[in-house]
Image (cartoon, rainbow, N blue to C red):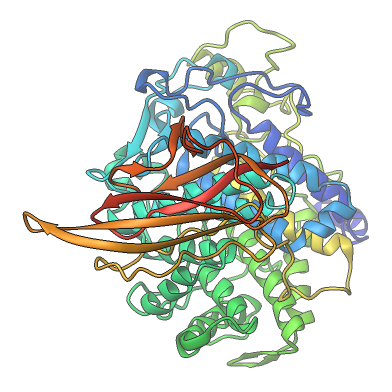
Length: 619
């Protein structure tokens, strides 16, 4: 009887998929994972506000962000990777998302994460990386709205570093800054400022985050260390800023940090090497490598090692189930399927754009073959598999009904606000054999085992628990597949250039400053900023420098309401007035006429400060 039922199901599963519908559902899942005050346009209506006092005991506002999976903890490392991958999906395939009407929702999903990261980064060298404790949280089965578990917040700092966490968060902020560059330039610049600071924090104070936040070890241990995140962050900062410092960082540190040495068959929230190598290969194909060409070619060789291994034509190939699904581990294997498939999808478009073919140990692979392989993985997820099961909740006719997810498995707070106790939730709701009372639309669950077997049971957390980082890479692939073929050149800029009101900050320099004019604002900017060292002296063995900064109004109008952001400033400043976190005109100036300049000076014992335009008016 079982084979007969399978045959009856297969015609539906193989009939082709509505990738547009799958895209819409996959984005909707993130709204079910929201923590904090839910917005008026919240579409997952069975959820309510939760975690409204997060951070209060630590004296910081940490309300917001995402729950990572089926529990109620906010883990910073997987959340940041989720935001990075959602942003990358939009950067590559935002036009396709817009065509399907989902770009706005995708950008809202990114911003829900970055708004939280801004709160979690209250100082340049402080980042909160977890709210809640996995041990106490897993002891309870409660809705987020009913949480009675410990909500302590955990942070990294110079004395308790976490380069992997800070690096991934820097990557997320940098990638998201590209997403908002056109629609919200002020917010974009704010994200980029945080990204710069987080990268410097990660690079200067090196260490594994789970050595500082010990409670994360059981759940999100950083097995790969932090070298991959340092390169990953540098790649995204170069993509976001076009700042030569970060390209040089990739070139100068590729060998020592493993970017040119590690050939991987995995890409995940923990292991970023394949992602770095794919991005650097893109820079190489765009002609941006310059003097680092030889090093970047080694990155690309490792990127292509990954691609070849996934499609089964490499010297060491990724394992697959009999049904053809990439298989790496028993617990939440689907995360590796979606992340790998995303890299394969974008690389197929990079190859098409550069008119290249992938050369593997077992033969050449055309770009369309790569894309077809990625499509086969997505189709498997959506139902083209030996069980004819869709592993996206709410898509198709046969999908998981007992998801390992606290919020969806307990009656909605809006329907019944009666308190669900810590252990009572296990007794009443976890143990139920019925379907979940709330549909967790769009969630990608852990998926089948190595032999394509799957048990739809709530206690089978290895297979039925969803995660945000399962869905994030899928957004881009679904948008790509839904849009069809043609019209792609991924090596051309797909986002506008730096907003006209933002001057790029100085690259981080060597300990002995070599002062040159600051990176100028784009030629279209009405404001130019230049800096120079005017003198230096030594006192008690410390060398001090006096810097002069010139702000010029290049427009034909009068400049008013100027606000400057001055970061990496460690000494006194003259000629500007402090206003909150910004600097404004001094008291003797309220405007700057067309063509005129003003000067301010400062003294400190380091390289020039970063001076950026935050906002201005032209009258």
